[in-house]
Image 1 (tube, protein in one colour):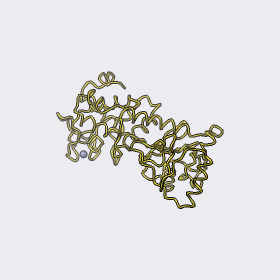
Image 2 (image 1 turned 30 degrees about the vertical axis):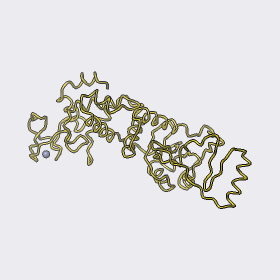
Image 3 (image 1 turned 60 degrees about the horizontal axis):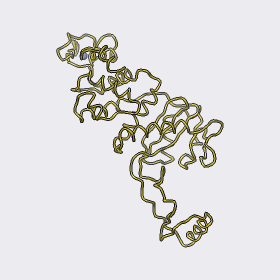
Image 4 (image 1 turned 90 degrees about the vertical axis):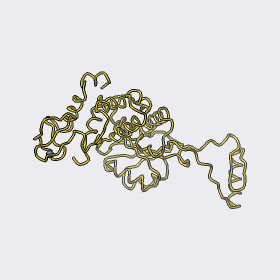
Length: 322
Ligand SMILES: [Zn+2]
Protein backbone atom coordinates (compact mmCIF):
# COMPACT_ATOMS: atom_id res chain seq x y z
CA UNK A 1 0.00 0.00 0.00
CA UNK A 2 1.45 3.34 -1.00
CA UNK A 3 0.41 6.81 0.14
CA UNK A 4 -1.85 7.45 -2.85
CA UNK A 5 -3.69 4.18 -2.26
CA UNK A 6 -4.17 5.06 1.38
CA UNK A 7 -5.65 8.39 0.38
CA UNK A 8 -8.02 6.69 -2.04
CA UNK A 9 -9.10 3.88 0.25
CA UNK A 10 -9.27 5.87 3.46
CA UNK A 11 -9.94 9.49 2.55
CA UNK A 12 -11.11 10.54 6.00
CA UNK A 13 -10.16 9.84 9.59
CA UNK A 14 -13.49 8.03 10.00
CA UNK A 15 -12.63 5.70 7.08
CA UNK A 16 -9.41 4.81 8.86
CA UNK A 17 -11.21 4.14 12.12
CA UNK A 18 -13.86 2.01 10.44
CA UNK A 19 -11.06 -0.03 8.88
CA UNK A 20 -9.39 -0.52 12.27
CA UNK A 21 -12.75 -1.60 13.72
CA UNK A 22 -13.18 -4.19 10.97
CA UNK A 23 -9.69 -5.54 11.53
CA UNK A 24 -10.15 -5.66 15.30
CA UNK A 25 -13.78 -6.76 15.65
CA UNK A 26 -14.95 -8.08 12.30
CA UNK A 27 -18.23 -6.88 10.78
CA UNK A 28 -19.68 -5.04 13.76
CA UNK A 29 -17.85 -2.72 16.11
CA UNK A 30 -17.82 -3.93 19.70
CA UNK A 31 -17.31 -2.47 23.13
CA UNK A 32 -13.61 -2.64 23.99
CA UNK A 33 -14.50 -3.49 27.59
CA UNK A 34 -17.20 -6.13 27.43
CA UNK A 35 -17.24 -7.16 23.74
CA UNK A 36 -20.92 -6.24 23.43
CA UNK A 37 -22.20 -5.18 20.02
CA UNK A 38 -25.02 -3.31 21.70
CA UNK A 39 -23.63 0.16 21.13
CA UNK A 40 -25.14 3.62 20.91
CA UNK A 41 -24.61 5.98 17.99
CA UNK A 42 -21.07 6.95 17.10
CA UNK A 43 -19.98 10.01 19.06
CA UNK A 44 -18.28 13.04 17.52
CA UNK A 45 -14.86 11.75 18.53
CA UNK A 46 -15.71 8.45 16.78
CA UNK A 47 -16.09 6.51 20.02
CA UNK A 48 -19.08 4.44 21.08
CA UNK A 49 -20.88 4.15 24.38
CA UNK A 50 -21.82 0.61 25.28
CA UNK A 51 -25.46 0.05 26.18
CA UNK A 52 -24.54 -2.90 28.35
CA UNK A 53 -21.64 -1.71 30.48
CA UNK A 54 -22.22 2.02 29.91
CA UNK A 55 -18.55 2.61 29.19
CA UNK A 56 -17.30 4.63 26.24
CA UNK A 57 -14.42 3.25 24.24
CA UNK A 58 -12.48 3.84 21.06
CA UNK A 59 -11.17 1.21 18.68
CA UNK A 60 -7.65 1.78 19.97
CA UNK A 61 -8.53 1.07 23.61
CA UNK A 62 -6.15 -1.51 25.05
CA UNK A 63 -4.06 -1.74 21.89
CA UNK A 64 -0.61 -0.50 20.94
CA UNK A 65 -2.32 2.70 19.80
CA UNK A 66 -4.15 3.18 23.08
CA UNK A 67 -4.64 6.85 23.87
CA UNK A 68 -2.82 8.12 20.80
CA UNK A 69 -3.43 11.76 19.94
CA UNK A 70 -2.06 11.29 16.46
CA UNK A 71 -4.72 10.81 13.78
CA UNK A 72 -5.09 7.20 12.63
CA UNK A 73 -4.54 8.38 9.10
CA UNK A 74 -1.08 9.64 10.08
CA UNK A 75 -0.38 6.22 11.58
CA UNK A 76 -1.52 4.61 8.32
CA UNK A 77 0.87 6.83 6.37
CA UNK A 78 3.68 5.88 8.74
CA UNK A 79 2.88 2.15 8.36
CA UNK A 80 3.04 2.54 4.59
CA UNK A 81 6.28 4.54 4.54
CA UNK A 82 8.04 2.19 6.95
CA UNK A 83 6.89 -1.04 5.37
CA UNK A 84 7.93 0.26 1.98
CA UNK A 85 11.48 1.11 3.06
CA UNK A 86 13.44 -2.13 2.89
CA UNK A 87 16.50 -0.65 4.50
CA UNK A 88 14.55 1.41 6.99
CA UNK A 89 13.92 5.12 6.97
CA UNK A 90 15.24 7.80 9.28
CA UNK A 91 13.02 9.49 11.85
CA UNK A 92 13.94 12.74 10.12
CA UNK A 93 12.53 11.48 6.83
CA UNK A 94 9.41 10.30 8.62
CA UNK A 95 9.04 13.71 10.24
CA UNK A 96 9.15 15.40 6.84
CA UNK A 97 6.73 12.96 5.24
CA UNK A 98 4.20 13.05 8.06
CA UNK A 99 4.41 16.71 8.97
CA UNK A 100 4.82 15.97 12.66
CA UNK A 101 7.57 17.04 15.05
CA UNK A 102 10.83 15.12 15.20
CA UNK A 103 10.17 13.65 18.68
CA UNK A 104 6.73 12.54 17.52
CA UNK A 105 8.15 10.88 14.40
CA UNK A 106 10.84 9.19 16.48
CA UNK A 107 8.34 7.94 19.05
CA UNK A 108 5.95 6.72 16.35
CA UNK A 109 8.76 4.77 14.71
CA UNK A 110 9.68 3.18 18.03
CA UNK A 111 6.04 2.27 18.65
CA UNK A 112 5.75 0.80 15.17
CA UNK A 113 8.87 -1.28 15.72
CA UNK A 114 7.12 -2.60 18.81
CA UNK A 115 4.29 -3.73 16.53
CA UNK A 116 6.74 -5.62 14.35
CA UNK A 117 6.24 -9.00 15.93
CA UNK A 118 5.35 -12.26 14.29
CA UNK A 119 4.14 -15.29 16.14
CA UNK A 120 5.69 -17.72 13.73
CA UNK A 121 6.03 -21.43 14.19
CA UNK A 122 9.39 -22.78 15.33
CA UNK A 123 12.08 -23.11 12.69
CA UNK A 124 12.93 -26.51 11.26
CA UNK A 125 14.85 -28.16 8.44
CA UNK A 126 18.34 -26.85 7.86
CA UNK A 127 18.79 -23.96 10.28
CA UNK A 128 21.86 -21.77 10.47
CA UNK A 129 22.92 -20.06 13.65
CA UNK A 130 25.52 -17.36 13.90
CA UNK A 131 26.40 -14.23 15.80
CA UNK A 132 27.41 -10.77 14.69
CA UNK A 133 28.45 -7.54 16.33
CA UNK A 134 26.91 -4.15 15.89
CA UNK A 135 27.99 -0.71 17.07
CA UNK A 136 30.33 0.09 19.91
CA UNK A 137 34.02 0.70 19.86
CA UNK A 138 36.55 -2.10 19.65
CA UNK A 139 38.03 -2.98 22.99
CA UNK A 140 41.70 -2.29 23.50
CA UNK A 141 43.82 -5.38 23.11
CA UNK A 142 43.61 -7.28 26.33
CA UNK A 143 46.92 -7.47 28.11
CA UNK A 144 48.43 -10.86 28.15
CA UNK A 145 50.18 -11.78 31.32
CA UNK A 146 52.74 -14.40 30.49
CA UNK A 147 55.07 -16.46 32.59
CA UNK A 148 58.70 -16.74 31.48
CA UNK A 149 58.29 -20.23 30.12
CA UNK A 150 55.14 -19.16 28.25
CA UNK A 151 57.06 -16.24 26.77
CA UNK A 152 59.86 -18.50 25.67
CA UNK A 153 57.42 -20.83 23.99
CA UNK A 154 55.64 -17.94 22.35
CA UNK A 155 58.93 -16.45 21.12
CA UNK A 156 59.79 -19.71 19.42
CA UNK A 157 56.41 -19.84 17.77
CA UNK A 158 56.65 -16.26 16.63
CA UNK A 159 60.10 -16.93 15.25
CA UNK A 160 58.67 -19.87 13.36
CA UNK A 161 56.00 -17.67 11.90
CA UNK A 162 58.76 -15.30 10.76
CA UNK A 163 56.58 -12.35 11.45
CA UNK A 164 57.85 -9.11 12.75
CA UNK A 165 56.54 -9.07 16.28
CA UNK A 166 57.44 -6.67 18.97
CA UNK A 167 57.37 -8.19 22.40
CA UNK A 168 56.78 -5.84 25.27
CA UNK A 169 56.33 -6.61 28.90
CA UNK A 170 53.01 -8.24 29.60
CA UNK A 171 51.69 -8.05 26.08
CA UNK A 172 52.64 -8.66 22.53
CA UNK A 173 51.87 -6.68 19.45
CA UNK A 174 52.18 -7.43 15.82
CA UNK A 175 54.26 -4.65 14.29
CA UNK A 176 53.47 -5.07 10.64
CA UNK A 177 50.87 -5.20 9.40
CA UNK A 178 49.09 -3.06 11.91
CA UNK A 179 46.75 -4.93 14.17
CA UNK A 180 43.32 -4.08 12.99
CA UNK A 181 40.61 -3.83 15.60
CA UNK A 182 39.56 -7.36 16.12
CA UNK A 183 36.29 -8.11 14.47
CA UNK A 184 33.68 -10.26 16.05
CA UNK A 185 34.29 -11.91 19.36
CA UNK A 186 36.57 -9.89 21.57
CA UNK A 187 35.12 -6.46 20.92
CA UNK A 188 32.84 -4.30 23.02
CA UNK A 189 30.35 -4.26 20.22
CA UNK A 190 26.97 -5.64 21.06
CA UNK A 191 26.37 -9.16 19.97
CA UNK A 192 23.29 -10.20 18.08
CA UNK A 193 22.57 -13.88 17.59
CA UNK A 194 20.44 -15.11 14.74
CA UNK A 195 18.97 -18.39 13.60
CA UNK A 196 17.59 -18.68 10.11
CA UNK A 197 15.75 -21.52 8.44
CA UNK A 198 16.90 -22.18 4.89
CA UNK A 199 14.33 -20.40 2.67
CA UNK A 200 12.35 -19.59 5.79
CA UNK A 201 12.14 -17.22 8.68
CA UNK A 202 14.78 -15.71 10.88
CA UNK A 203 14.88 -15.06 14.61
CA UNK A 204 17.46 -12.71 16.05
CA UNK A 205 18.09 -11.26 19.45
CA UNK A 206 20.56 -9.04 21.21
CA UNK A 207 22.54 -11.29 23.53
CA UNK A 208 24.84 -9.69 26.05
CA UNK A 209 26.63 -12.85 27.02
CA UNK A 210 27.35 -15.41 24.36
CA UNK A 211 27.35 -18.28 26.81
CA UNK A 212 26.66 -21.86 25.87
CA UNK A 213 23.64 -21.69 28.14
CA UNK A 214 22.09 -18.65 26.46
CA UNK A 215 22.76 -20.04 22.99
CA UNK A 216 21.18 -23.35 23.93
CA UNK A 217 18.14 -21.62 25.36
CA UNK A 218 17.69 -19.68 22.15
CA UNK A 219 17.79 -22.89 20.10
CA UNK A 220 15.28 -24.57 22.38
CA UNK A 221 12.89 -21.65 22.21
CA UNK A 222 13.02 -21.21 18.46
CA UNK A 223 13.87 -24.48 16.72
CA UNK A 224 12.09 -27.83 16.46
CA UNK A 225 15.12 -29.73 17.67
CA UNK A 226 14.05 -33.18 16.53
CA UNK A 227 13.32 -32.15 12.93
CA UNK A 228 16.32 -29.99 12.24
CA UNK A 229 19.99 -29.84 11.41
CA UNK A 230 21.77 -26.91 12.98
CA UNK A 231 24.72 -25.37 11.16
CA UNK A 232 27.14 -23.09 13.00
CA UNK A 233 30.74 -22.04 12.79
CA UNK A 234 33.32 -23.46 15.14
CA UNK A 235 32.79 -21.02 18.02
CA UNK A 236 33.12 -22.96 21.27
CA UNK A 237 29.84 -21.57 22.63
CA UNK A 238 28.03 -23.88 20.21
CA UNK A 239 29.99 -26.94 21.31
CA UNK A 240 27.41 -28.72 23.37
CA UNK A 241 24.42 -28.06 21.16
CA UNK A 242 24.85 -31.53 19.67
CA UNK A 243 23.31 -32.79 22.91
CA UNK A 244 19.95 -31.38 21.88
CA UNK A 245 20.05 -31.19 18.09
CA UNK A 246 21.82 -32.63 15.03
CA UNK A 247 24.68 -30.20 14.78
CA UNK A 248 27.16 -29.52 12.00
CA UNK A 249 30.05 -27.17 12.55
CA UNK A 250 31.60 -25.56 9.54
CA UNK A 251 35.24 -24.72 10.12
CA UNK A 252 35.60 -21.62 8.02
CA UNK A 253 39.38 -21.90 8.07
CA UNK A 254 39.10 -25.07 6.07
CA UNK A 255 35.75 -25.19 4.40
CA UNK A 256 32.87 -22.85 3.67
CA UNK A 257 30.27 -25.41 2.77
CA UNK A 258 29.59 -29.10 3.08
CA UNK A 259 27.16 -30.59 0.56
CA UNK A 260 25.58 -27.21 0.19
CA UNK A 261 25.29 -26.84 3.95
CA UNK A 262 26.77 -23.52 4.97
CA UNK A 263 25.97 -20.37 6.88
CA UNK A 264 25.23 -18.28 3.80
CA UNK A 265 21.61 -17.49 4.66
CA UNK A 266 22.34 -16.06 8.08
CA UNK A 267 25.24 -14.14 6.63
CA UNK A 268 22.96 -12.53 4.05
CA UNK A 269 20.67 -11.52 6.88
CA UNK A 270 23.59 -9.90 8.72
CA UNK A 271 24.47 -8.05 5.54
CA UNK A 272 20.93 -6.63 5.35
CA UNK A 273 20.87 -5.63 8.98
CA UNK A 274 24.29 -3.98 8.83
CA UNK A 275 23.57 -2.11 5.64
CA UNK A 276 20.31 -0.96 7.15
CA UNK A 277 21.62 0.08 10.51
CA UNK A 278 24.89 1.60 9.37
CA UNK A 279 23.49 3.09 6.18
CA UNK A 280 20.31 4.52 7.56
CA UNK A 281 20.77 5.05 11.25
CA UNK A 282 24.55 5.56 11.46
CA UNK A 283 24.68 4.77 15.12
CA UNK A 284 22.32 2.85 17.26
CA UNK A 285 22.31 3.15 20.99
CA UNK A 286 22.53 -0.24 22.71
CA UNK A 287 19.29 0.59 24.46
CA UNK A 288 17.37 0.64 21.20
CA UNK A 289 19.26 -2.00 19.28
CA UNK A 290 16.63 -4.69 20.04
CA UNK A 291 13.98 -2.49 18.37
CA UNK A 292 16.09 -2.05 15.26
CA UNK A 293 16.82 -5.76 15.12
CA UNK A 294 13.07 -6.44 15.45
CA UNK A 295 12.41 -4.23 12.43
CA UNK A 296 14.82 -6.13 10.22
CA UNK A 297 13.62 -9.53 11.44
CA UNK A 298 10.03 -8.54 10.73
CA UNK A 299 10.87 -7.23 7.27
CA UNK A 300 12.88 -10.34 6.44
CA UNK A 301 10.10 -12.67 7.57
CA UNK A 302 7.50 -10.70 5.65
CA UNK A 303 9.67 -10.29 2.56
CA UNK A 304 7.24 -12.24 0.37
CA UNK A 305 4.25 -10.46 1.83
CA UNK A 306 2.91 -7.81 -0.55
CA UNK A 307 0.98 -6.14 2.17
CA UNK A 308 3.10 -5.53 5.19
CA UNK A 309 0.87 -2.50 5.73
CA UNK A 310 -2.11 -4.70 6.62
CA UNK A 311 0.07 -6.82 8.89
CA UNK A 312 1.02 -3.67 10.77
CA UNK A 313 -2.62 -2.58 10.97
CA UNK A 314 -3.49 -5.99 12.41
CA UNK A 315 -0.69 -5.83 14.94
CA UNK A 316 -1.61 -2.27 15.86
CA UNK A 317 -5.04 -3.29 17.14
CA UNK A 318 -3.98 -6.57 18.67
CA UNK A 319 -4.65 -6.51 22.36
CA UNK A 320 -2.44 -7.95 25.04
CA UNK A 321 -5.20 -10.24 26.26
CA UNK A 322 -7.29 -11.28 23.32
ZN1 LIG B 1 -19.42 -2.73 27.17
